[in-house]
Image (cartoon, rainbow, N blue to C red; front, side, top):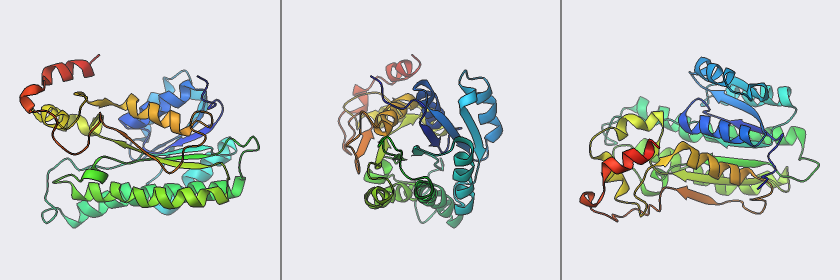
Length: 281
């Protein structure tokens, strides 16, 4: 299926991480032009891009995602290079691996998570709408698309990581509000959200290496497996497609193996070694 993403300009925040790099590969395979954002790992992102066959279609930029002015400059640089921005994946995120009940978590930990996960996404949406206001909609009526990357923690909560859950839950407010605002700038523009569950990324890998954790995680899912970054990226490709998802807006797609917040299996019914082996395939 042709997703009509060829030559579209796609900006991905947090592109140096596992889900972000999978996004870059997926959109590049569809022929898109890429504005790839990194925070502190710009050099790592640039080295990775330099080895890709589609490197000439990618622009790597650094910005502090929690800084509104820096995000505005990020979008301005992307627009100056490619002329416009058609799709945005608000993917940049922060998760503190150490377990801490909310009364134990430091103010700095709470603030840094909210600044990245909530305000970073809001500044990204704000800058995208500002860019659309400046460029106007595409003349071919293939509307713009904003995809927020949330988390199942934003729906079910996450004990010991309340600040992360709060930041991701706040994306619902961005989704339900901005979908009604963006059409004033582009009548065919859409806003949607993906809620990944546990996904094998660099950010989560250390936690997933703990013995017994995978069995504990997948017992809440009918599908006894862990998502890969590519699973999230493929969902984003669909949501950004002006062909496949042209009439989809304001929706949340959960990519978490059917998770619904209750135990489906006992840990004794989960073959953790088999799940790990499947991830390596």
